[in-house]
Image (cartoon, rainbow, N blue to C red; front, side, top):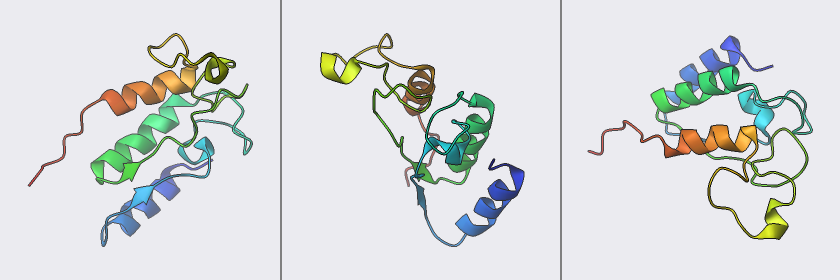
Amino acid sequence: MHRAHDQSTLTYGSAPAPRRVEPPGRCAYGRAVTYTGDGAVDTASSTAWLDLLDRLKISYANWTYSDAAEGSAAFKPGTCSGGTFAGTAVLTPSGAFMRERIRTPDNFPTS
């Protein structure tokens, strides 16, 4: 999966211009073990990637907010048809992980 070499390449390539990362799947951050979006959540690899993006001031987006029965889905199956999205009870481990990441304030200078 994407590890230190890819992170080094991103570090080098991000210096000249601002970038925004929106991966085609959670696999790009190491959060899902397969290309389909299914698999176990790899929070250690994800944290390393997101920390790197934060350090380089590269924005990122959560790729999926689905309730599919797969590891990368943010919501538990049935959430989207239920209409209740508030709180953590409707989140999968992947969704809870990203919720905490986006709720953490950035430490970027504003001027």
